[in-house]
Image 1: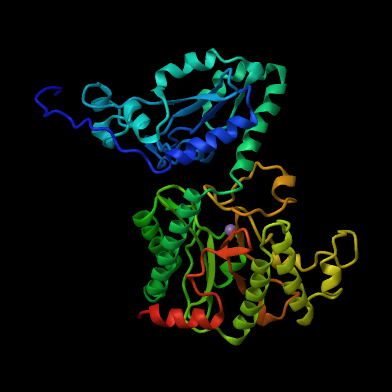
Image 2: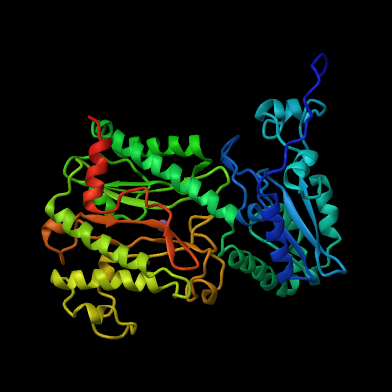
Length: 467
Ligand SMILES: [Mn+2]
């Protein structure tokens, strides 16, 4: 079987656009730890069931530093005397026709999975010195635990090979500092990342619009939410890599379940559809957008009453985004609008002021949270909840800086069995979410291509609803 095949094309790929950006990011990381060796793996294939795997998706920190899409790869930065780092990327070799794996390995053999880049190809595309993965074990064994930091919890093989270091106890803290530094460096996006986010948002806008066009068909199915979920997923796969997180397609009272990802309910006239969906682009940055749409294309008066409060809260939140403002400013601004409205509706017996109190022991404090449930913002990037390992002082209690991208997504949720609210509000859930870039002077809403006001939503749906 190994003979009489035409020669394979071994041309090298051209340079990936991200290469110079990734080089800068590695330099930034290296500068944080000038005398340490740093080990950042991407992780490997994971079994879904029996002999089938989940589609592989690179580790976000690894990908940010390399742009490499291949599973099992490991980046090693070795400090040198000049206080810089020598970069080596360990990648699996190809399983081309010259190898027995070509035929035999159903996970990696190119007969099974198609051509894969190997050491030469990855080096040419990413402009990083690459070595075969088979050399990694020796390379790790040469590192001194005292000045090595490892991104743990990603690759069991890497974790195991450095397990012996943990005996002293202190390396784990050092490793956590590496994860923290990566998260904090990723807080501010470079131009290449912003382009990728804009592309992800544009694809997300197309997906939302296509969902509106499919509402009519979804209404004919017992589990029409799935039809809308699938409609969006098709757009995510065609324009990007995947969805960045499980799409929430929540019609009627499902909208009051925050992470409704079962998406197996009906799509019924007279109800709202809360759609929280984001395309993850080919360069793995994800959008995260929510719209709450009247299924027939027109809000009822009570739906519009709730919608308009959430919209005003979101607008106040968006306007609070500016460099130098605290990360929590959009949340505070949005909650002020919502608590005031809840007080007007007689739902906050102690009043909005008391409910918004920073003192959790104060009477009436936090009562609005029964209906708002979650915080208003999170960072967005390669991960939908980006930069999660950053210290509070750099993120949750920190200050907004130009280049950060965050969501502003207040919501109001009246559970169907909540006896504290009037019956007409029960089962209504509304969230509006946009992706906001902090600019040097203020902000740019990256997702303005989707309508937000009730009137704009109704006009847009009128153009795209089909029956
Ligand atoms: Mn979000």
